[in-house]
Image (cartoon, rainbow, N blue to C red; front, side, top):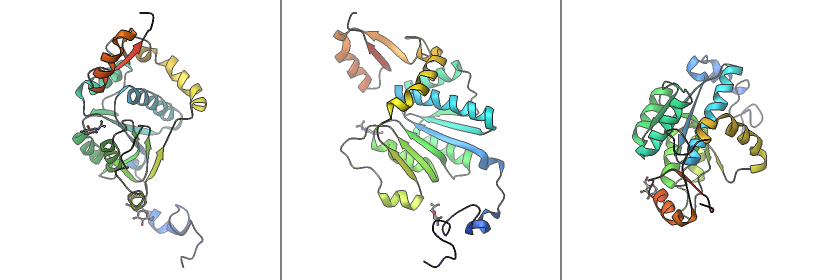
Amino acid sequence: MISGSPYPFSSFNPVGEAKVIALAPLSQADAVLTIAIVGLGPVGICAAVSLLDMLADLKKSKGLEHRVVAVDPLESRRDKMQRILSKINIKESTVMVTDIPSSKKIVDEWTGSIGCNAVLEVVGNNSALTLSYELVRPYGVISSVGVHQEPPLPFTGRDMYNKNVSFDFGRCPVRAMLPIASRILLKRQDVFGGVGEEASLIEKVVGLDDAAESYALFDKGKTGKVLFNPWL
Ligand SMILES: *[C@@H]1O[C@H](CO)[C@@H](O)[C@H](O)[C@H]1NC(C)=O
Ligand SMILES: *[C@@H]1O[C@H](CO)[C@@H](O)[C@H](O)[C@H]1NC(C)=O
């Protein structure tokens, strides 16, 4: 390869060979972090609450603006997310809760059809990965915590390569995350503390006799997080 500079500076580097490209000045829109959360089940809600907390800190400390689109096809899950957002005082202009078709329109509008800097996939279904790939911008990151089973992934390495997308996959390092998670758990007791209230993550606590029915309801998307108490 004859490029005049050594790899990786030969491909892209804001201060290297690509100076010519970097001549276009960065606009205010370039400094806005746009993130999508695909899937608003209990884990998606925890992810959203934690992410918004981190982004609020970044805004305070570094002045970094952000916009978040939270996506789920189920209306009941979107309603729950919306109630939690009002409870924690998040403005409509920075966070939109939406269904799948509108999510693409919103991201197009917000980013001039470029896409999100990062997408969190919290479903574990190939359709969610496909949507994540559509929503992410070139050089963006898809972070997938959904547990994908046997079906092959809906994209190939070549798709990732062609869009220059990073794909992050696998189990969460629990010990490393626990201190951060406990802090947010304590801080947001208005969401994580109650049971069965409008904006609480946990919908009900039932005995083990109701376990089978609860799993069936959860599977159909008819209930949110249910806790079992064997002594009930
Ligand atoms: C994945 O999502 C599609 C549509 O969004 C749905 O038809 C399908 O049943 C889902 N699969 C699983 C395993 O949940
Ligand atoms: C991916 O990166 C290469 C190298 O910088 C570039 O030529 C290509 O246009 C990029 N692809 C997209 C979809 O931005």
